[in-house]
Amino acid sequence: MRTRKANKAVDSATAAPSAPLRQYSELAVSEVAKELRRRSPSQRQGVVRLAQEALQDPRRIRDEDFRIGAVKVLVASVPASLEIIFRLLKDFSKPSSYEVHFTIFCFLDDLLYPSRHLKASKQTLERILSVLEVYLREVPNDTAYAAWMAGHLLGDHWAKGRAVSVLVRVLTRSDNPVGREAAIQGLDDALRRLHPAKARRVRSVMKEILRHERNNSLKASLRSALAGTMV
Image 1 (cartoon, rainbow, N blue to C red):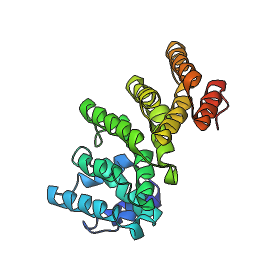
Image 2: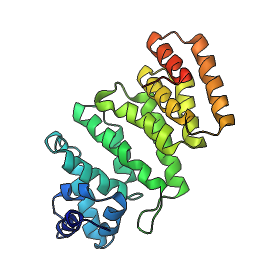
Image 3: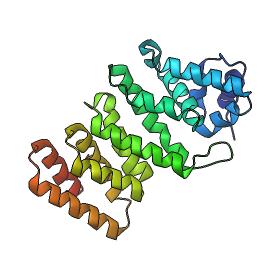
C-alpha cells in the first residue's frame, strides 16, 4: 500500500513531463516504470532526456533526491535507456560522475526482479554484466565508493554464476588494482551466498591468486576475505 507521501509523489511526478525528477526518488523503480508507461512515447522520451541531462550537470547531481530520481527513471526505462546508462558509466571525468555511478549500481538490481511494468530480458542482463566487467577493469579510483558498489552489486545483489564469474575474471585477469579490490569485496559478499561447492571453488581461486599477488593491499584484502573478516 502506498503512503500518503508516495501518492503525493506520483501525482506530482505525473503532472507533466517537466515535473521535478526528484519526486521519483520516493518511489520504487517498478512504480516509476508504471508511471512512465502511462505517458505517451514522446512524453516518456522527454522524461528520459531530462534525466540524462540532469545526470550530466554537477550542480544537479549534488542534489541527492534529484540524482536518485533521475537514475530511477533511467533504470525504469530499460532497455530504451540502456545506452544512456552505459555512456554515463564510461565517464570518469569528474567527481560527480562517480556519484552517478554509485547511484546507478544501487538500483540496477531492480531489473533482476521482473514485474508487470519492469522487465529485462536475459540478453539485456548479459549486456549489463559485460559493461560492469569493463567498468571494474577501467575505473581509475574508488571516488564515492562507486567501484566498491559495483563489486557489491555483483557479489551480494546479483550473486549468481555469471556475476561471480565476472568478479573472478576481474580479479585474475585485470591489472587494475581498483577494480580488483572491488572484485575481492564482491567475492567476499558472494562467498556468503554461494552453494558450498561453488564457494569452495571460488576460495581456491582466491588462494591461488594470494600465493602470487605482489600488491600488499590486495594481499591483505584477500586474506581478510578468505578468513571471513573483511569489513
